[in-house]
Image (tube, rainbow, N blue to C red; front, side):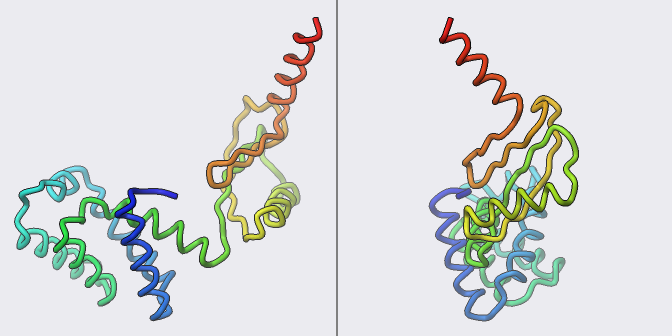
Length: 180
């Protein structure tokens, strides 16, 4: 899971509050918008200053809330972050929140790498296989990688399932080399 322990704690607390109000996905979308704005290097650097006055942090949050038309839950959450000097970790909080949200909704992201474009049937077969394996709804992201030569690799939560021709040929080569 992404982020620091503090980011995960804040994300978990926010998800729980959002769940109570039935706003889990809405808050996820809003938090992504906030993280995008706060990812600006100069703003991020300023917010990371340890001696940044509380009033300045609160002003940033108020301006952000107004500019993005944020609802009360998200605005209040940002105020808490400002008061605790945690605005600089909003990006980590957002990543952790999205991860927790997907788990809560029974979804998992998968990076599918293939040597050539997959047909819809082939992609569906990969998704179905990994949905059964993980017992979750798999959300695939397809990437083309001609170096694989053929087959696919699937990465889910840091675990790689490699069914590529490149790897099969490497294993065959290693086996032949050991036999010589």
